Length: 438
Ligand SMILES: *Cc1c(COP(=O)(O)O)cnc(C)c1O
Image 1 (cartoon, rainbow, N blue to C red):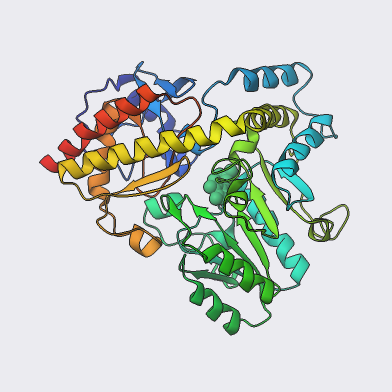
Image 2: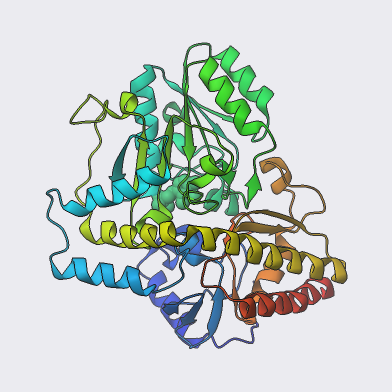
């Protein structure tokens, strides 16, 4: 695809070639690749607050924020201090350390529906474990997920998954025997009657319904009014476990995640991203009645050599403590500034005559090149990805780093400034011009 660019890309190109010779696609997670948007992926060498710098010394305003975790921006001083402090005492012991309960306390204080939490090292592990636990608890086999929702890369969950799977246009993944997904029922998002229908078809066989309460992994798609309430009522009636996958939304859309924002009590919650403060952490939790089935208390086995790693726990604690102390200031500020940014860019599209639909919940958002409302995977997938690619490349050339896919949410953090937002809207005006031209 287009390789004309006004950025300097020499060093990044060299690093990409080097990485490609040893690492598949040069990336350790396919969402970082630029295959769907074209152009040269910048190799990032440094970040501070809302900005990053690449190997060619280009500066960017970052709206990826490590795909969500960095709500306080890059290299937050308190998080850095905590990591360095912990590292000086040793990086891992394979035995319990005090900071695990510190982070547990912070998480439980924000999520009152959870009585116990288990830390793992990624969101993938969190959702995989929560599914296993739901099956152990209900002694049922089937799981319900929604098209366009991504819950990590475990076999049973890679069915009509959003995120990189959607970006690359592959239906699931090679290497997953169909027997491994035969108990996974994938239904359209925001459609309660589809769920009702599944519950009657698989009577007393559905262990759980797992949902991103605000979807971020087909781009940002909020739940329709009463959808989450409907899922809660249905799962309660059918005695199935309701899992809110708050890996992205936890501490993002509100301090207490989507369950606080919408006032819904799921049975199990999965987390990741923000709770690790930029280090690898995931978690799953819920009431004692379910969590006490987890080994060593109960028969559901789940383990991890580096789970509860002291550096990751320290980073998470430093992150969540600041969010707790400053939540009355941070979340309203994120809401206001994200609104200004998202609507400012949407207004620029309108002026340029480019059809755009914008979805946003708090500081999670997506501009879809789509002239219709985007409410599920069906409507999201009708977006014009070629136009998105042009927009993306122009924005990047003008110092704005967006997720390199139409089907990923962008994020604003507490360190983004009014100036960042004005610059981004100005760059969008140029980018919509580029989209229109061709
Ligand atoms: C990112 C994400 C995951 C996977 O987390 P990893 O840490 O990448 O394994 C799962 N669920 C949701 C909703 C996510 O956004």
